[in-house]
Length: 176
Image 1: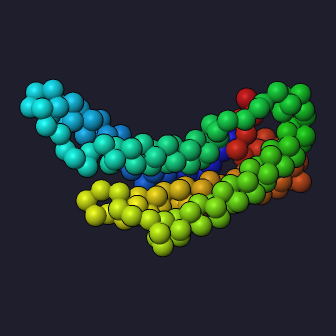
Image 2: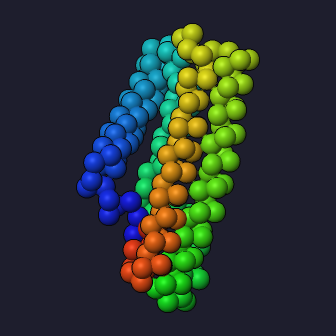
């Protein structure tokens, strides 16, 4: 199970809708921009000068947002051989430990991403249309913080589940 079980409540539901809406908007904009560039180049032998760097940064945004959404839905990369061999309480304990480990790793990546963006603020240039590079790179710390929080929530929920004997609630892990 994952955050799916809690997305019908308040903040999680709003975040879920914002993520889905932003991802849809980014994907449609990327497709339209890329298609427009192809048409302009092939039909008129011109192009929009800033479109290619814009598209590259949109790919970064969709990748990071996709990672946050995959974590939300419990679809992140994981090895699931061991959980299938464990009883429900063991699955919950393992889910709590792996989610806690993932949260710590993502917290370190969040810190590194914040430092990276701060360095870009201080020393970086402009990416296109006089937009500072650090602005389009804000997705890095934002996504890693979201992923970190989700993994901490999953770790807490799985640990609570293991403690209470309701080990079917192993958040962040599929229990099928």
